[in-house]
Length: 320
Image (tube, rainbow, N blue to C red; front, side, top):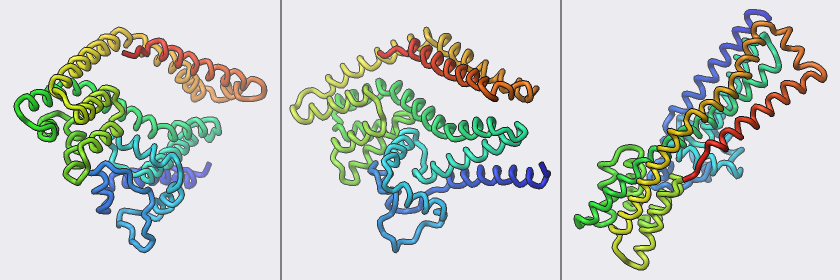
């Protein structure tokens, strides 16, 4: 391959990576988007006013993608996942980053493997699913941290209610004194109420942002007490004790199943890594597995690895 063409491919991949990063780090300046983020409402993906001028940070590529995904079903789902992961990205910006990652890793895999179509497809698939994996991991970590803090958060609300504070004052105190991400989410609840939403609507928006069964139970208790009355501090105190016990049991189960979980990761990764190393060392020898009827061997091995990994995950996954 000519060195000039190779340099163009590598330079193009680098440009795509930095273009995606610039889109990711650019802050939207539209006032409706800022107010929508504070109010927790889902705004349309595409602006309805055709005469309005786009913000300076909006590129022609993002405008075209906005028009393409405006009526797609996955747009709201993607926006919800980005909000749960606390990523300040629009759906369009996320898709641009995902496309740039796919093309960049595909080009890198093509160059490293000596222009092998197999490695091009593998690297492209890895680049396509890498942003989704990152969003999922960030969302899971944030949800786990929130659930671990929820017991102490309820105790803080209960103590505030017993001191004579109203529910809104107690939530405002949580937004100021609790650690992240609890403070951020309850701060959004306070801002939503200040912008005109009822406490019930603000708490329901909180449940949509944080997909937590424990939080849902707390919000249902607050809404029921608001409708029928009762001692809210005593109800929340009981719920807080239940949540703390559940968190303790989950921690014990995680400690007991950690070895088996990581063993599944290692066992599933060893054949893939070993096959990749052997391909780089002796490409002609490994290419025989991808020709003719022998291609059934890597396909069957990959399917077996996926099934075994899922079985191990199912065994060590214990719901409390």
